Length: 216
Image (cartoon, rainbow, N blue to C red):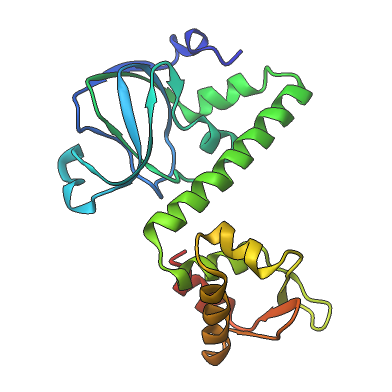
């Protein structure tokens, strides 16, 4: 069972005032957080206000009201936090150690866990896309997209390629940019010898350079 009451004995309830930073993006999870009361904002916090556990949102993606599991998806997928979470009111939070939360997951039927994992994965992809749109320029978004969709290339062992199975207009819409901008960025990446090829297949010549450009 994933009901919060199932974890009360192994977790701790903490109280935080408005402006408290509950999660920083990019950090390794140590606790899974359940919002028992109050309201939080999720998104990209102003890094200048993140000191001393206090922050404000520079780019808000939305708000969440209690009761709500705030970062359970990260624990289910064994991945780092993807967004900042800042309290907008006084909140009560149940903090469950990741190991205890994972032990609770093992009690689920296999079909239920598989469904939960799929939902968590879809939610994370949407969150990553939103974060990319808010915090990265067009080049960084495109580089990130190319890396995410890379597949082994048949032409050379160890090489990576991206097969464009959608129209460029559709891909550009996913990235939140104009089709002309997407085409321009691909041309610039070719000129910088980060990718090669045209048409439906793009070869990733320098994955490390693309990672640096994407900020990953």
